[in-house]
Image (tube, rainbow, N blue to C red; front, side, top):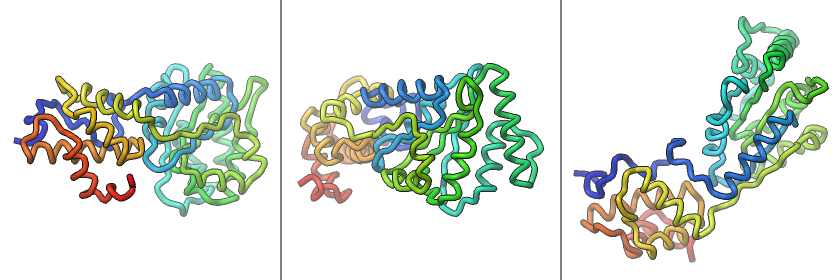
Length: 274
C-alpha cells in the first residue's frame, strides 16, 4: 500500500508535472489570462510574463495554449531548453510551428515563407500566436532583432504574429538588448507567489481534484506549508507530496504541523522560513 490508497486518493495531487486538470485559477492568474487574451485578440504583437522560479509561468503558458481554440488561432508553444540557439534555428522552428511546408535553407527565403504563412492565417480569419517559455535563455541581441523584424510584419488590423514571452526576471535584461523591441512590449505581467489564504485554497483544490474526501492536512499544517514555501506553487507541491508520504509512513490520517516541520527540515527549507 502507498499513500494513494492510504488517503483514498485517485492520483497524486501534488506532482510538479503540468496538468491542466489541476490548474488553480487564482486572481492573478485569471487577470493574467485576461490581459494576454486581450493582447492576442487585439493583435498587439508582444506580451511578456515574468516571474521567479516556481511561480507558475509554464503552467500559465500551457493553460493559455489550451484556451486558444484551433478554429480561431494558429497557436504553438516553444520551450527554450538551451542558450546556444541561432537565429536560423529559431526561424526554422517558427516556420515549422506555423505549418510552413518544405522549409527552405536560406534565411531570407524562410522569412518569406513565414510572411506568406502569416498572411494565409490572417486571410483565414485566424490569429497566429507563438508562446515561448524560458526566453531569458535567448540572451542575444541578434535574436531580439529577429523578433523585432517578425513584429514588423503587420496589416492595417495589427500584427500578423503575436508573441508571448515567459521568463525569469532576467528576461528584462534580455529585452533591453534591443531597445526598440523592449518598447514594443504591449502587455507586461509579473507573477508573484500565492498569498497565505490562496495557498490553503490551492492545497484544498488539488486534493479535491485528486479525489480526496476531506482536507487531509490540518489548517495548521497548511499554514506551515505557506510558511516554508513562501507561497511558491512548485515548493507547495514538493512539501505537500513529501508530507503525504511522511504521514503515510507514520500512519497519520490527518497531517499536522509537526509532519510539515519534519518534511521542511528534510528538504532543507526549515532555515529559510526563519
